[in-house]
Amino acid sequence: MCRLRVVLFVEGSEYPCVRSDPLERLWNGTLASALSFPPFHKIHPISKKHLVSMNPELPRPVGAGESFDQILVRKLNQDPFDAALVAWDLVPAWGPASEYCRWNETVALYRFLAQSRVLPDLWREKAQRRFRELAARAQPGARLGPPILEHGMILPVCMEPMFESLLVQDERSVKRALGLRKTPRDWPTRGWGDPHERQPDQRVLAPAILSVQRMRPAPRYVSQVRGDMKTNKDGWDEYILRRLIEDPQGRNIIVNHPLSLRLKELLVRRP
Image 1 (cartoon, one colour):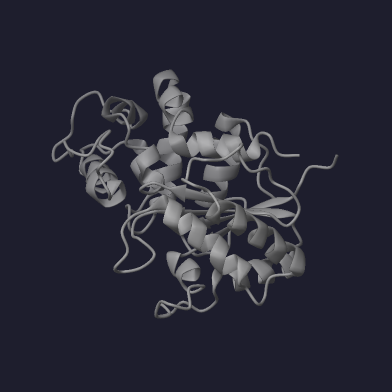
Image 2 (image 1 turned 180 degrees about the vertical axis):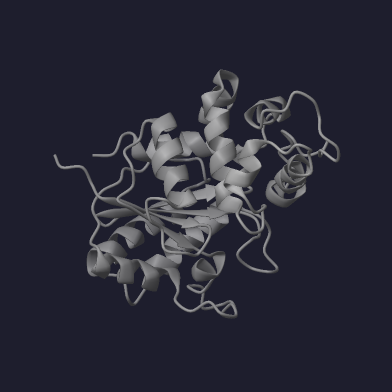
């Protein structure tokens, strides 16, 4: 059986993704290699606002442009593919008054896709079938097994609380990844390995990177990666993840994180 062409729509920087881009290196290079899943056919960055735009009950986000289903159809027409993963951060929640809930957002995603007026029939029918299955569960974990990617399927990966939670599990591993033999000035002391930390990107990694950039002399990689967690988040994510995976202890931590296990569940067994 021919391998499915699977596209990844991932919440991240909104620029065209080419071979040299951090998102491409992160997902199709570092993660695909570490978790032993085939590379994605294409990687398309999206924003949370594209998902929210499918909800007719919420005000359309300012500058949203297309909704996610419209983006999927446009990309499908430009370069056909067989199935899709959509990965988004749980934080912030879809609605301003919503509580954080991965299950609610997953069910909502399928409800909006099932109601889409632009999806091709096959894609909409698969979304409808998946929505009915989820809605009929007595509880979220009541499933017979993991979903299987097939033609026309869209499968969700809700990153809780966000992608960067994968990187801040172990402070000592991150220090080794950054080549630190001693703790630099202004290094963050809180948030490492804390499951309740909702902003690991800005409250943990951002100050950590800033403290490294202030070192004199600065490590060589500072001039290679450049920017910070606002101007080059994907670049720093990719660098730290790659270095963590090169470290035996760090690699073990990464591959056993719930996000990694979810990706392996969906992708390693695919046709």
